[in-house]
Image (cartoon, rainbow, N blue to C red; front, side, top):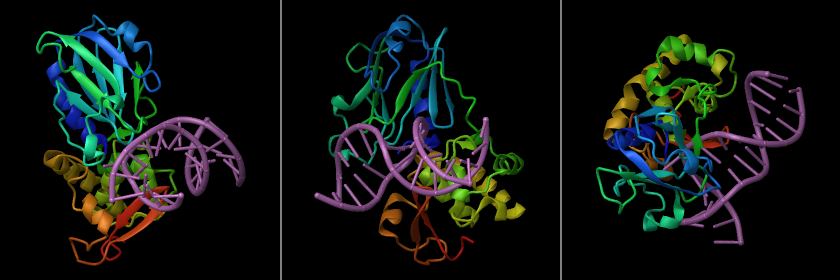
Length: 259
DNA sequence: CCAAATGTTTTCCC
DNA sequence: CGGGAAAACATTTG
């Protein structure tokens, strides 16, 4: 579930922690840096930042980076800003918690201020990780920047858009959604795209992602999870949607208007 | 039992 | 060192 849009929703929700002092740190050492429990207690949350799919919690001397893998979710003061459809039968199983932070101040001690819950354990919590390897953030894309980021790449556009070193924050759902709006087929190789097509992709990123964010995240596009799964008809021209594996991920697209 | 799942990372080959 | 493809990772759900 978590793509850049979900990370942004969680960043926003985590703003409530700013100014609080971290008192308790509990982590699953398999997916979190053990140093966290040494350096975080006693430090104050200064600000919350997001870059790509990573949420960063700044304290005076360290930055706690949260990456959510495929199934990570955030619970703030006992409330989940996003309710995942996946694993919905038992979503609050505490055995799936990978990180818990308790804070002094605002709320009592009972629900941890922050829980990261991740059944599949593909997410990671890191300390002072750098972002150098990431490409342009999804909310900073324009046509020129995208053209530059794509230059030198030859693989299918869908694959390249998912590469976090090219554009940081696009996941499988948003990538398909963007290409659907841009009218570009996912298997098209980057080198074969016209300037106009690259521009359309940049526009789709700039226009549609904020709309999806407002609606609640990467599952709120025209190619909804239901439509993807049932392979219904294209909402634009009613042609039957197609599905294939591209770059190791499931791609869904309209064979008529996506060229 | 099998396939698939919203994401990286690693490995191997050019 | 870089691009690309495929496998690996871990766990649950349908």
